[in-house]
Length: 568
Image 1 (cartoon, rainbow, N blue to C red):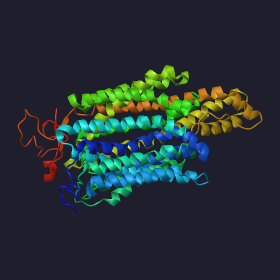
Image 2: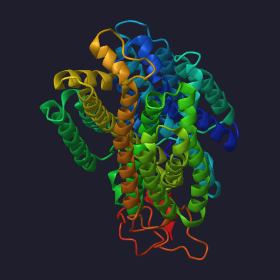
Image 3: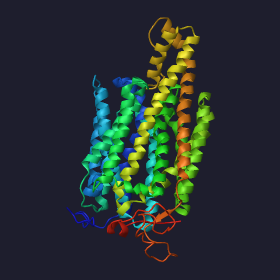
Image 4: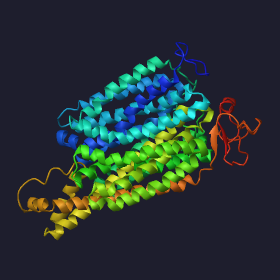
């Protein structure tokens, strides 16, 4: 294994080109973030062709996010141990092969299992690729240029998440399988640029904590399974709560194990840095709204607004417009004043934007909603890159792959929980609203409840483009009530979007726990270097701030040497 200084075998093959390396990593992560949301817009077409159930549609989206959440920490550690460039290349290959298999799903009885399985493998590839790609960016840029590079990196990944539905709408007009096949040329470009950039492979001579990796995967998997299946099993089901509580218990065991093991999967002591913890809490609650938004907004547009896939994608373009503008402003705030002002502004604007958007959903008009859609996007844009960049800068001993794994684990776990909880909420609210409408039109309570359950199953997993089929009084009643059912679905979605507003409000509350410190890797020019400035005897990120209480004593020598310095 290469020496601990991290200069791998590829380091001497040529001079590293940071800009080319950044471009290569952006092409690599482009696939990851587009695929977080691109499936949402194509879900109705996939469901029509291969016969997915409502739960199956949600799991096609959720399996990817769950695998991301479960394996991101493992991907970060593998990147640190075996080399960032090597793991990035492996992750890219795994991801693109799984993408090809998703696009090749057969039209048969096991299509649903096939698609969910390879979506999960896609998530595994992404979990290897992303932390390694970010670590490459950190490694090839000097300190004075790293902040700008990271802001561009995180801003682009957020923008690509928003662009997923737009690309999905265009490709779906040809064939929904193209939303997976488009990853092939993108991956080829990423691999070619990586080769041309002459990226050094930096490694750390440490052991891999397989027990920790197993515990975190099981804990997150059980928790999300419970939330996801609550709509089918019921909230009173012992199995539902067994999964949720069991998953939480396994995660507690994971944390206790990590605190005892010599070389853990995650250095939990990084959470003693109050700013790092605040950044991750803000990201957790923001992700409860950000990724699920694209699934629920696109289904709402197609069901309640009667939009085509392309029109639904344009509906989400309003969100992206607000996000793109605010991302630039948030990056400037981060450079001049640090993360705290940006994440506070984002939480407040996002909470107001989502609440106002929710109130307008029953207008059934895109034109009445676009200012609030853009405002919600701006809230996410203000905080996403600043919180992510600030958290990465607080790495212990420059273990950027590991810390990226922590951040992305929390982000994607939140997205998976959001999809599960909001999906359950939408199904229940739609069933209740439609049942009331059908009872008003003369159906008995039993008939109305059964029909409403079927309608909810259809519209939460498919579009509303197909009217109720069949003959007889029930089918006739459903066809006559189609307009009212569209409104019922819009009213049900209001609860989902109010939930997103609450999530952003909680992100705003968490932003107040950020101490307002800023990170560099050198003491400020007006502050002479000394014991306090270098962080000896204090936290990895608090050396220049003697009044910061969240210090971490007894750091190893290499961590002190490469530790960022925090200043106000």
